[in-house]
Every structure is written in C-alpha cells, then in structure tokens.
Length: 177
Ligand code: GDP
Ligand code: MG
Image (cartoon, rainbow, N blue to C red):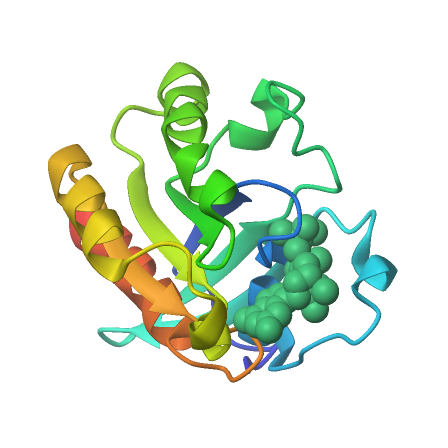
C-alpha cells in the first residue's frame, strides 16, 4: 500500500460519482486502506484519499476524490471535476433508480470534466445477488453504447474493486505514455 519515500512518476486524479448510498465511500475505503467501514459516516468531510501503485515500472499516485454527501443532482461543483483524468460512475445493483440516474451523471461529467476523461461504470453490491434489480446485460449494453468500461463490484467482499481501479489507472497511463 505504498512507500512514502518512493519517487512518484505520475499523479492521477480520479473522481467517484453516483447517487447517495451506492457505496462510493466504501469502494474508496476498500481501495485506499483495504477496509470496509462499519460506520461509514465517519468518512464524511474527507476530500480524497491516495494510494501509490506501480504500473509498468512507474510509480503512480492515485488521488481518488469522494463526494462528501453532495450527490444531489447538480450539487457537485466543477471544482470537484477539475483536473480529473478518470471517473468511476457507481450505481447499486439492488437499486434500479441508481442505474436509471447514470445518464444524468454522465451528462454532468460531459459538461464539467475533460472530454478525454477515462470512465468506468460500476455496479456495486454484487454480494446482494438475491436483491438484484439491474441485470448485468442492461448495464453492459449501456456501457458499450456509451464507450465506457464496465465492472460489477462488491466493496463488502472486496470483489473486483482492485480490478476496477487498475482498469482505469492503466488506461490513463497508456493514454499519457
Ligand atoms: P455512498 O453514499 O455512495 O458513499 O455509499 P456508502 O459507501 O456510504 O455506502 C452506503 C451503504 O451501503 C452503507 O450502509 C454501506 O455499508 C453499504 N455498502 C457499500 N458497499 C457495499 C457492498 O459492496 N455490499 C453491501 N452489502 N453493502 C455495501
Ligand atoms: Mg459517501
């Protein structure tokens, strides 16, 4: 999980967006600290967390920004998106509405973020398969149509969280190299 003394070759800012309660803060906690926080309100106010990883022999510091409860439509300010080279667009597979709002979030991104931003669509909470309300195929089709990467994750069980971040960070790395 990163050595503070190492030289940093790149810093990539990545933003987490999506409706409230889809699991953005838990996905970040899993990636940055390998934790699942039982009282997730404890994270409110934290702007971003970082983790340094190695991609093709270069050290890349991922600076991951989390909305501090500003998920109301259009409440996320343009400062949040400024300088972002990646975005994780998260919905909850058990909440159809959180998936139905994805086009709005995508529009927000397209209005505020750099047009070359790398975007991954994430369906979180796959551990709740028995409550699934969004078929994988619907999300896959949407992602293909919009040119987004797509993965389903469980922050709780640590499924695919690492893969989701490495997919985005490696794609960004390949664009800048
Ligand atoms: P945020 O508002 O998008 O930041 O969502 P949080 O990370 O605060 O999570 C909202 C709720 O969903 C909390 O009760 C979390 O414990 C729960 N949660 C987050 N990720 C998962 C997951 O992968 N599986 C399950 N079962 N619950 C999750
Ligand atoms: Mg949160």
